[in-house]
Length: 340
View 1: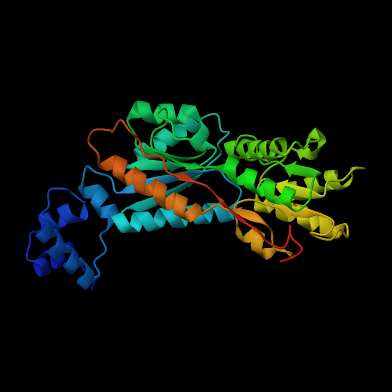
View 2 (view 1 turned 45 degrees about the horizontal axis):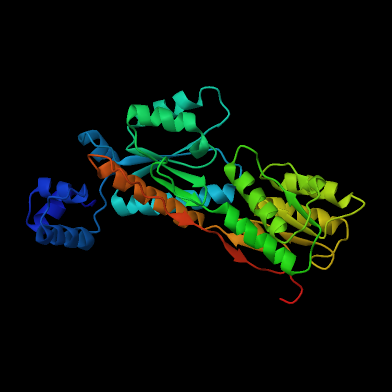
């Protein structure tokens, strides 16, 4: 039979209300009482029903994840990180895919929170980088945490998790330069994502620091997709003065570029080095495996959820907001080096 809150209260020798206070993480519970209740919860393997708590309480025990991203691996990692934090705190996760370019997107987000009685939202690009959504949520007093591209915490931002795409891209480009390449190309991702601009800026900064001129024709617009990588590489390989190294804005683009190069009988990395970004399964499923930057999306999402839970429990909002910064780490593989 399913374990109930009554069973936990009986085993711990406390009232049902006390068990409820413990499960709701209320700060006024004495430590010895907390220990007794949690011991009973562990022994009985009790799992509180978040949906039932939502109905029985004025407080919500669900959060939402709103996204518009074609990369399935990114979405799965984000969901798993959020779910880990939700399970730890006894919350449910509502997943809401939608179109960021919709004319009614702001109202859609607001209605989602109201209709589903959400405690708050975790926003990923491009939603996290749309000021009109943040303004609307602030006006309604809705808690949220944004995952955004950036390297410097700012007092102008509320709770958010920063991903330092610029520094990671700078390091990838330096690695390519250290391998002796001077003719470098860049395959861009979607323009509406700040990560695309930050990664391009890091790429350009590394070249500038080394005194290497960048051929603007070698910056190819695109989207975060395999097909975009194929099309971008086709343009680059058709040039009379071909690049000897390609930095793609993510691993999916890089995998497409590598596919195109191999179809053209170009050896990797002897004739062309290729690097990606994010360390998604795409980077490990190609041959040769791709040099990339390890972006720990699961950890980033878990941190974002923890910040959201912390913010939603505070009766008065703090003046100093937490803004952890993640710098994706360089992972060197066979697609850029001959000596591995």
